[in-house]
Image 1: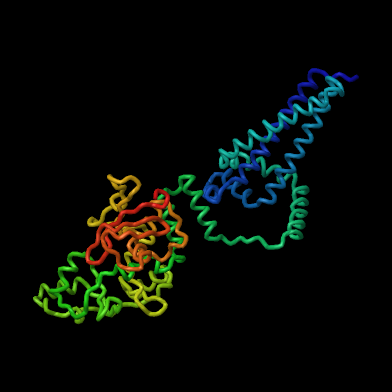
Image 2: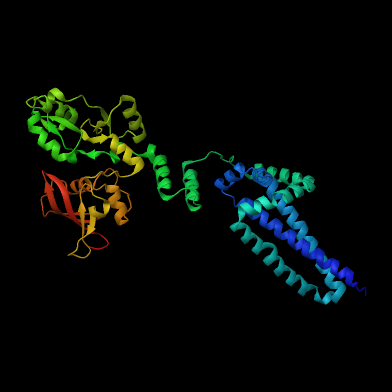
Amino acid sequence: MYTATHREVSLQIAIIIILLVLSAAFSASETAFTSLSMIQKKRLEQDRSAMGKMAYGICHKPDALITTVLVGNNIVNIAESALVTSFVIDLFGNEFVAIATGILTVVILIFGEIFPKQFALNHNIGVAKVMSFPLRFFQIILFPVVWLFVKISKLFTALFSKHKRDNDLSVDALFDVIDVAKDEGVVDSYEQDLVQRVLHFNETNVKAIMTHRTEVFSVEAGQTVRQVFPQIVERGYSRIPVYQDTHENIVGVLLVRDIQKCLINDHSDRLVSELMVTPAFIPESIKVDELFRHFKKNKLQMAVVLDEYGGLSGVVSMEDVTEQLLGEIYDEYETGMAERIVPNPVEKGVFTVICEVSFQEFLDEFGFKSENTEGYSTVASYILDQAGFIPKIGTEVSTPLGKFTVTGIKRHKLERADFIPVSVD
């Protein structure tokens, strides 16, 4: 039997180690390039280094990349297996081939697949840049084989694929990109929330952000400036809807600055109807983004929202639209959410709720789903709808979300209520 010399053994071991390193390099390259996110690819595009430019070019040709890696890795692993088999036979004979094959399989799995892939997954940009030139070299060397396999792959893909790949970036895909950007620290939570609000902007109806008709503060057209001024000061609004005969019949909008001019010029006996301006009327089905454009085009700050029958549904302001984008805006006269929904210090499982709280914020605070709860702007509008009448202090209103007990009313407007969630009740 032929016996290998010491030099031949050393050479064979060196070649086996080199092949194992190549196997690890191909495996790491595959994972590094295929795990690059859109944001990471953008970073490579902006990278001015030669390796960055080369890596960016490679990742934009995925067919050639995958084929090169698979062909190269298979060639290396087959060559390594053949060399190890020959090496074992020369040294120990045929009876140790099975043992050597098992050991080689474990070694390739650990050092040629698992470890390099895991490392590349954690350092994908760095590995992609380092391996860009070697990978490009193998693409050139293996070009005929790679070209043939790419063509065969595309042929089979065309035969068995029923639909053409959709390359359009959907809104859901944009949400995924923002989530990835948040995870990678490119944007913070506030920026993530802001972008998501913008993407939802054209999906939201005005009805979801308006002030419901039961909560609209309005003044009567036949009243004088002197009569309405104390109410306006108490409410603190800059624009007030004006009704005639009934609260449902909004006929104008009163500007506080016009009231101030009358008081300064000692015209406090003038009627509200003489000062009001004609309001804008919009349907409740209009989208928020369309309303925003309407406000900008016509330089408006408030509009009256009508239901499908032409009746009053509510009012909406530019501030409501802005809050849809930026979140709840509080001024120095408003309390924060922590003071608007608080646990009752006496009764366990009971929460005191300020009824002007946004209904969506109320749902979020208690972790309720928004299914079958659309169309309510505040907690007060939800309680009124569920009750079917204007409740009094002490009135209990049972709802699918839990039980409300009205504890505060001012000028027929719900101010506070105790709430027991369904999970606690």
